[in-house]
Length: 614
Image (cartoon, rainbow, N blue to C red; front, side, top):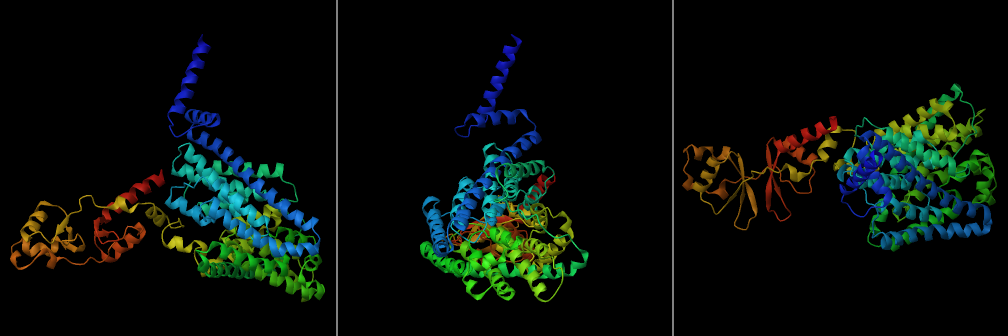
């Protein structure tokens, strides 16, 4: 009888947990998780969530890697070279065009595909990412890269993982911090699965997604990365994973070469980023002509791939070919094959391929393809490292560690292009087993990072959003201000005067109010200016006659006028410059909406600061 009673109580608890979440239709697993959530502590449920999000995001990443790998493996191994040239000439054009059409007709023109929109969702949308991002990036990037787009899958995998984590957290009614943590956990799991590198996945989450945020509980993030990496180990084989195990032992006498390589990768990363901005600006002219943009970009990319086959697809296979010492294979499959395979020809060919990789990647992304800079920066860094090593050999330098230079060059360009030195260091260390290369990896990555920070403190891809206060940065005060909605800073006691009112009525309003400023509007409700108690003091004290003036004549223009689209961070700067406590908020028709109060901003700031510290 006692057991039956306990079962009945458990059933009521289970049912109660379900009723407490009137969201929409649930399946059995979701109902079970709601019930578990009711019975576990916050930390316990977050650990369980980290496992589930990590497995799901990792599986999505593994699936995408397998599909694209087998497409490109078929192209490279099963199709003769003569026919392969035709593929290089057609596939990139088809891939970009098809991706653009899929975005337009299947995903309603939703072109958000880079990490910047994830960062914006964290800052502006409380870490709430659209549910279609859980699969749209896989479809779009699979088409783009599978057909030879010169981009990587890691960014789409990270975005997919972020969307999975965010939507899971939304489903189970978790708060902002928990949503953000699981969002980052999904991204970390995706990166960990793509490279079988859990530490790199964790570093990626901290350096890119969680900038400016403070977390005391990051165990779910670690667990998610482990789950993603574990799935990668179980499902993917060595051919799919990017593993470069063979390398030379580190010799401290070669440290000068690594310092020079750090400088080279730093400036190349800057070049890579600037080319991306220039190409993006070029394709902006086709913004409303999606098909034409895709055809132009696809055509240009196809030409580049015909002339330089290493630009086709992700490019990891080409790095493996160089790593195995089969550089002649790359020359043989290009238009350079008739020029011979001397070291000079190889050097020129690879140097041009390295420089053009930046254009191929930017064209793919800007013309309608879907992917990211993760793989291109790694591949370009590997090519640059090999070119540098080959140049040293041609100059007669003995015992050049070319393989090491390739590996470390990959870390350098990734560090400089993504502003993520720790991610770069641990990624190469994990994928190559090169923990003994930590000294050159740190040297090159830090030099490349510092060079790019010298030119721009923030990644140029995020710079505009950072200036507008739409993403978090390392400046904690700005991050908090960016989360305050402008409408929450309106003074509820804002008062309005009309030019129709007599001065006696105005004087009476000021005497009955504790406000120091009032807005003045004309007969058409258009804002004219403000009237301060200070300006009215002579009239309030009877030193001047009110019969000689009017409200319209006394109204003065404020130092600044605030628009609804202005950020609180921008408004704060206005207050600092004007040294006032209230400024008017007007809509696009110059209708007065209320006074933005400096004290309200400070009150909201203190409240958020208190939440952050808890």
